[in-house]
Each structure stands twice: as C-alpha cells, then as structure tokens.
Image 1 (cartoon, rainbow, N blue to C red):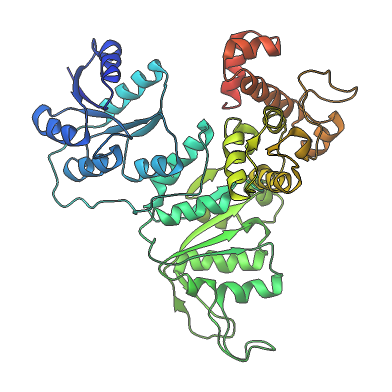
Image 2 (spheres, rainbow, N blue to C red):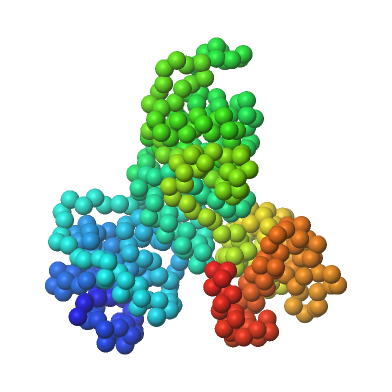
Amino acid sequence: MDKILVVDDERNVHYSFRRVLGNEYEIVSAFSGTDALQQLAAAAPQLVLMDVRMPGRDGLDTLQEIKRLYPELPVIMMTAFVSAETAIRSTTLSAEDYLVKPFDIDSLKQLIATTLQRCKPQPPSADTKRLSPESSTFPILGESRPMQEVYKIVGKSAARDVTVLITGESGTGKELIARALHTYSGRVQGPFLAINCAAIPDTLLESELFGSERGAFSGAVEARPGKFELAHNGTLFLDEIGDMPLLLQSKLLRVLQEREIYRLGAREPRRVDVRIIAATNQEPETLIRAGRFREDLYYRLNVVRITLPPLRERGEDILLLAEHFLQVHRRADLQSLTESAREKLLSYSWPGNVRELENVIAQAVLTARGHWISAEDIALNQIALHSSASPPEGSSPCGTTIEELFHHQAGNVFATAERLLITTALTRSRHNQVQAARLLGISRNVLRERMKRYRL
C-alpha cells in the first residue's frame, strides 16, 4: 500500500484525509515543516500532500528542501488562501499541483492515482539546485480558477528559459504575466525591457529594436544600442506583436534562430542573449490566415502559450481587484464600497477588463461625496443589472442592450450572454449552485454542464 505524507498544522485536516483516503493508502501525519522532513526519512512516503501556510517553516520553504533532498518525490500543495506568488512559486519549485481548499474529493483521488502511477521517488540528491527568487510580494491579483491555471503555467515555464506567447484581450494584464515570467526565471538579475510594437511608427521600430550606427540615417549623429542589446542577459517583452510589420517579422525570426542582431547601418552582427516574451490581443491564427503574420515566426514564438481570461470570466476576482484599486487610489475619508456598488460592479461585462476596472474605481474615488462609494458614483459604459427591476424593452438581462452585445461580441452573442448570465447568477448566490440554477430557471445538472463548458 502506497504511503501519503499529509503535512498540515490542523488536526482535523489529518482526520479528514484518513477518512477519505485511509482505505486506499497508508496516511502518515506531520504537523509542521520540520516534522515533515523528519517523517520523510523515517516513513519514505510515495507522495506528499502539504499545506502552504504553517507556523515556523512554511510549506514553500519545506517544499524547496524536499526537492533538494528528494527531487523526484511528488508534492501536491494545498491552501485556503490564494495568491499569485504562492501558486507560481509552488510550480516553479516543481510541485506536482496546487489545490485550493475546499477541493473536490473525486478530483483529488484521481490526481493522487495519476501522480503515483507516473512518479517514483528517487534517492536523495545533494547537488540539486534550489529554485526560487526571494520576492515577498507580487502585483498579480486573482483567486479564480482560470487565474490559478495561469499561475501554474507561469510557474512551470518561468525557469525553463523558453520563448512564451501571451494572448488575451486588451487590459487583461499581459505585461504583468511577462514580468512574472522574468521574476521567477534565472534571468531575474538581468534587465526586463518592454516595447509596444503598435505604439511606435514602422520607420522607427527597427532602430528601436536593433539599434543604429552613426550615420545610418538622417539625424543618427552617434551609435545607439537597441532594445535587444539593452536586454542582454535579461528578458525582452514584445507587446502587440501582431502589429509588427512583415519585414521586421522576418528579421525577428532571424534573431530567434541565430541569436545575433545587426544594427541599422552595421556590417557585422552582434551576439545577444535575450529571452523573448511576446504578447498580442489578436488571434495569431487569424492573422496568419489573413497574411499579416508569418507562420514560421508564430511557431518560434509559440513554444509556451499562456491565454489570459477576460475579467468577465473571473467573477470572484472583480471585488478583490476593486478593493485593491480602492487602496491604490484611496482618499483618507473613504471607507469602502456599498453593497449596491458591489452588485453594480459584478453585473457589468467589463469589455475593457482589469484596466477598465481600475479606471472606474479611480474615477469613483474622485467623485464620491460621502464616506462610501455608492452605485451612483460608479460610471459604466453599459446599463447595469438591477435585480429589483425588469430590464428595459430591447435590452439583454446581462447588463447591456442587445444592440451593444451584437456590436461588442459579433458572431458570439449567444455564448457571451449565456456566460454572463451564469456568472452573475453564481455571484449573486455566492456560488450556491442550487440557488443559481433556481435564479436562471434551469436544472442544476444543466448549470454544471454550462459551468464546465465556460470553465467557470
């Protein structure tokens, strides 16, 4: 019978695991990080289930030591308190998975069985390198399941030094993810430089990227390095790569292949050691079919793909982010958001995503007249959802008129409206599926199928 070491400072957690898993596995208990390291040597478990937050040596520090001593031993991290830093660090330190309490028992059992089948513990290795930048805070906020999946991909790919393509709508935080990849990589001591390919005229973009020699063009009175040289031994983030001219795309492809650049006007190449992270708010496959993006460059960039979810698919993160932006733009006399203000934020579809949410909160802070931000202080671009009144004639129940839905979501109106309805019902019912199904007038089974379809 396989042994599972459960590491948690709460005794009721150990009792629960014995009840759920005791018939299939031998459960060994440890109540601290130090205790866990001792139990590893004494009990030789095949799998570790460990809480992130514990007094003394915490779960991440213990994970790092376990991976130093037993690099092949699978460890599944657990937490009730979600943060981007702990999720990314867990996967950077090679945790098998990162679970948020409470979790589905059947899914946990399946994960344990799959992990044990794939992984076999190996003897201790004294020379395994530790992997973890010592950052204490991180600016990415989000506790929703879609963001948890993003954190896992970031953690697994950050230290591999591979090229990454980040896709997602405008305002979803693509540069923050790029900075996270840099922060948790072996290049963290090197520079992180970002350039927006859509914000610089085509005639200037080449010199911005590759630099220029003196006399290369009118006004070039001295030699100047480009972003590639300045980012040497670090990371270069190419935002809105889909807007890069085709001629420059071919030159970028050569840089990725040869790891050298030519300054404008230069005869000799210069070697560069730069990790490329690219991002676009357009679908690369659509750009390729339209002849606006090179297919060979796409395959070079798309080694790892991270797709950021829009804010409308991150329902429980909206208020978390709103409170954060309230702190950022705080006035001394302001307390927080009223319940009606919170409902108004939750009922909106956020076409501008996180960037729009920050702008709305910043404006509300300026215009609020009392100690609380009310619904009237929140200026949105669409009609808010009011639960106490029927929607006006010709409007959708998702907080926007039908004409606006067709304007913003042409070709995908039904799915967008259905997803918004389900997200709003789940938020209003505090994720009670029975109540949410009753609000929507559908069965719970239908609701669960739709939640799976839209990854809610």
